[in-house]
Length: 175
Image 1 (tube, rainbow, N blue to C red):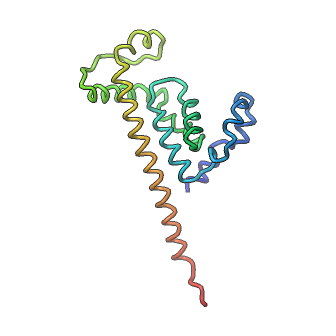
Image 2 (tube, rainbow, N blue to C red):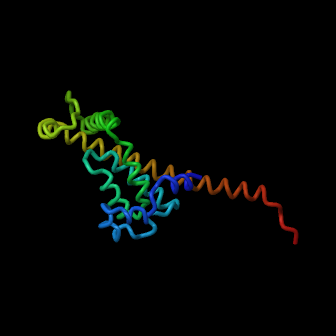
Image 3 (cartoon, helix red, strand yellow):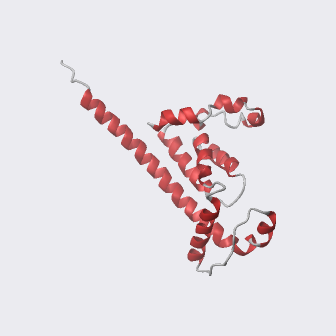
């Protein structure tokens, strides 16, 4: 089960609360359900993480942590999934969401190249922000929903298979 893998990879609440730079957030994330690995918390975390990964804005990890807190989702998984959009994947992801947004809005596409600079943000983003935002929000919501229901189904299926295997291997009791 991935539960054991997640427990090894992600930090514990105590480790995060002991971190000097994150100590001010300790009361905010004191809720133990934000760290539990159960079906509901992990399913919500997949929705939050995938949705926020497609938001075309900085500080996605902080936004994912706050959304996870608000949705009572698993914080480490929400924050970890934000890395779907990383420096290598941002250009193709956001160009794809821009194209999808132009298709949704029925607007012509503009020729542009994404550059991570203040000059690009001030000059070029003004021309493409609307289709980029519409496409990014739509893709984020759709992938978040797929992630939520996919994890929920996988978790239920795994539990059902475990019960089925346990019944098969457990000898019947003699009365």
